[in-house]
Length: 358
Image (tube, rainbow, N blue to C red):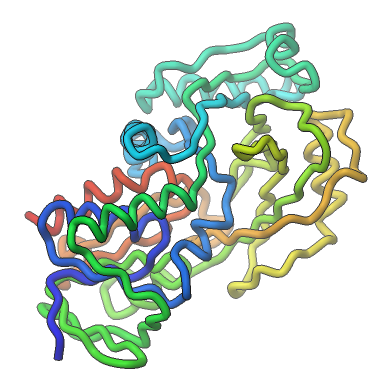
């Protein structure tokens, strides 16, 4: 049976970030990915936003890793030519009864060490985004957008340049034991001193034999593309909602505008597009963009967030569960790594490397 020092499950953005940093630290690493390409699920079905770290509870793992990850991600993009843009974002109070919530984001962001946030009056909103209706807004200049596929390709390049390996079309059937862990694939079995579970939507499946593993929950989000010229130059967000950040306006690097995602709790992974959400989308967007032309909205894609608690549970933090949490030597389970996982990916990788090398 072949032996590997470290096996990473999943070649999404987090798995590739983790694997590349392990390899760059001199650790033998093999990434196993069941699909025929990198980043085909969560990593390619999101808003491609570099988040600032505003919303999350002070002291939470999400807040800390988002802020640290944002700095690392911008450095990486600059160093490796990954297309991105610091376009900035507005979080808009559409009505007076929303002002206290948005002002709360300003205070929370400051406590999370996001110090570049400013408050905008209704008149100042019109200067920045004339088509946005709002009585006040939070301006986040360090929020940006990124070509997530180009970013993942750069991480794969770093992984392979440092001697790491990636195996596509390699489906893991189950894992067993510890120190070493045995990874059973369709074709062969491997022994690994460390198993790093970055399997995203399947992460709970491969953590099921460790203590405290949560059952998986799934929240689907729909995205609509908006044809023609974008009315916005920046990202525009409403108030956050349970399970997500509200149906927001996001630009890609080519200037294409899309709206989404909503939050639809589902029982199993299903990327089908449910067009019955259309009227709710129109109403949500018109709250801050009253001149929306519904005829220009076209179904684009869906994404699914890997949740680790039901809808009524409220905020769910990232979990990086290692031996200190579950008592199993040589296992790290990354659970509930949804937004802002893209932004936090390199900071998550730092945490994993420190745990493996401890």
